[in-house]
Length: 231
Image (cartoon, rainbow, N blue to C red; front, side, top):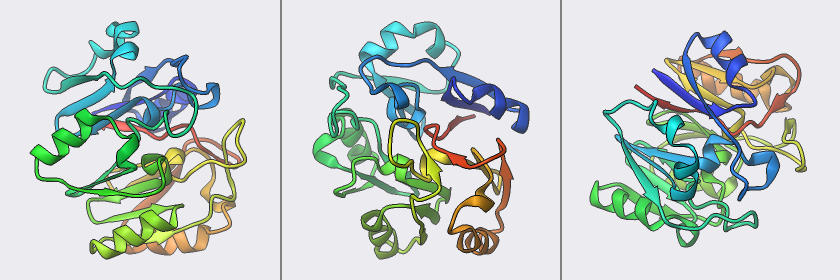
């Protein structure tokens, strides 16, 4: 398994998990605090990896390290710093659902999801991947009420938690999806989730999902853009 994530946290993540990592370098078209965040730079659906064409051209060597079993789709949509022009690849995939702010999402992603029988649901929140920590195909923790409502309506198990206690440099707060990743029934967080105000609710929820908790870093939980995984 290969973990794709921000160069800011890649080394610490590799030490803790033992996984091979691919470090994403900053993309100057994004706001600097999130410029190397995986949930802003790539989207993975099935065996397809979507990335901005310009970012791919500047980081070909990086993408050459990705398994040949994956198809890299270069997206022509121009990324810009201002929201929602920065969320073209920021899509939540859980089970057979693709949840995004559709009018801001790359056409290549929506077309692929449609062709592969995903149920596409549009929400007001553009940062759907940032906002949601997927536990498995049937459950997730989210900081967004709209996403929470959709997950419940679609028969998923979901927990709504506060953005309070999640740090993101340059912003008032970060998101739970950007603050960790679930691998083999373990939720890894970029910080000590015990310090989050909704820790007890998360612990109960994760316990019901037979999911353990590990901290990648000491101290408060930080949003580093999550982790994308490929086999």
